[in-house]
Image (tube, rainbow over all chains, first blue to last red; front, side, top):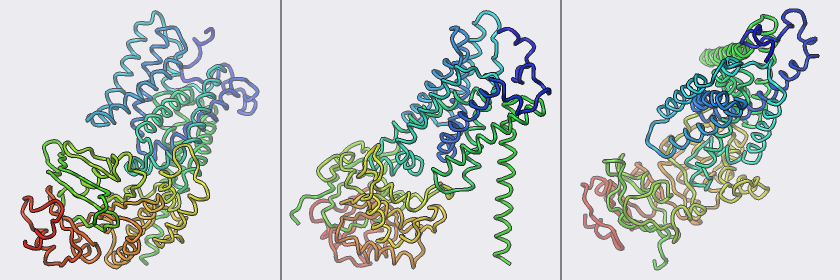
Length: 297
Length: 252
């Protein structure tokens, strides 16, 4: 790819630094692609993140995300789109973690640790075996929303459509699965298959998010928006809608901030989300304390 | 009582690794029984319910529920587990939780319909929680949650209701109300209730079983606290099981 040599790895827009406002930048195709990618990421992480947070499988998701690095390496090695490799690897590692947790006596965190490390190690080995330089490697690790090509947008769109379709069809089943698996089993819900399907959806979400914040920071977009949304509602559908909204605000706001401050976009998105969540949790805590002292007084 | 048993456990053995939970346990439950299973903690009471539900497969022995395997019979079972809700922030309302009970009727990929909603309303009214339907489940008191979980079990229109320590998280005034609720239900269904609360059980149930890894079974309705005290402190040995066990307990 010509012209990549001068581009910082963290994906600042090529050639426009500091000379345009954000709105003017929107005339550029890469900026529009970035917005679409951000929206798609927000939808995926908003919906799936709610299950991740409510069902407390944040670190299973982290394991799947990191294991997908093996697929990125495989993509380089085979000369195919690394995102396709990541899709394959994250799906496989999601099902592997699920299978190990459900079928063996190995503790969940041990299974997660193994897949997490082995996946990353495979990626490193594949990249070492690939002759020459691995371009854009850093953008897969830390995200590069400004350089998402149109072909990847199409892939993201398909993955998001699959996620929406599955959740729309199985909403009531997943509510039971999240709330009380034992009861679900007794009621005849195919608990194990739905659990594996949920991990597969997390794998798809990871692939969508890799483009935006990078695989190392995926876990942030899977948790922050849903954790924010949780404070404002006790209805799961509303929580999903709010979570999508927060995800979009974080992506958009982070993109704008990174543009203004000339910081890496992926990390800025994550930090914006983290700071907002911390502030909002702090406010709820203060409010609760205030009400408690008033009740005592 | 010539009708066949709806639950028939024969020579059940269950162990968790090296630790035995149930040893050679047999039990028959008949239609319209209100059976209380009592015994010390770790005596295998919850395990026994889970065997009936098919959540635990025994190492030895046979389980028959409505003449079928537990998995096949699940459509006829209502279950209220011992576990309290550990996540008080879970995003679901009372209404959401009760509707979950209709899953076994609605089935996969089908939305709940008007009939499901009507049954959910009915069940919430029975447990006296209809007015709280919009509340978040985690914000209710332990007793109120328990009522909602009973309603969730009832909307499935079960023929057999299995309750695991239903009064564990309820204060004593609420407990009386809860047992009144069960009194009202026992004409239309068969109830098996696990409890460590011997006093309450002796007042409300019709039959009693004492379980401490092995089964001490009493089929009589004439239960006095004295008999219960005696059975509860039984040493770990098989006193009786089978067709006419209550005589053995009377002699005890």
